Length: 281
Image (cartoon, rainbow, N blue to C red):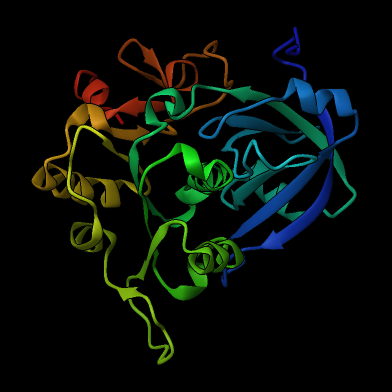
């Protein structure tokens, strides 16, 4: 059962805070619902987002970083960039706030089951990809080969290092980690931008192989030609947008691209769908 009032946030308690990056601009907040029934009502799928609501400060739409297979809590990784996020970064474990959602569509798991999956992610846009990878690992027999290409500016800017190391050690997916540049003599992964690394390690295109791409605009701009060169069909390339989202339920009209509302009709679209929309994203 969903909350009949989409404007009403569920009360949650901050259960844990993790500083993710060396510049401390990104923190992961682990929330616990005060009412266990609200956790059931908040049932979500990997790829969706929610509104983090702080009384007196406002709301901010953020992709869900935890997996639907992780029970008892929900996680969000938040970049400190404005009024609401700056205030959230100052909050402490035990503080109470609100959570509204889940919202938007999700990666098309009903199509992706049984397929090979290439995930290409960069920077702090990796949050919903973390949710997706964790969900696939917990349902490993439902998917084919999984390759993950993830990069950041430097080793200290990579998110979820404990998860990355665990996933690599498990050997159930192929991890391809890269950083733009590093002087670390012990760095054992790739060094260089994400698109050329993706070109080197991505599985060949096929009817049974899909790519999920989420990251900074420049990463996406230079990754698309790589996927084209490898022969990926545009309806096999799936992307997630975050265009100017505000209300999260398609009422304010702030996130429209043509007739599509990113918060309601998206945020997940295939490249084929995006090609039919105005280039406003």
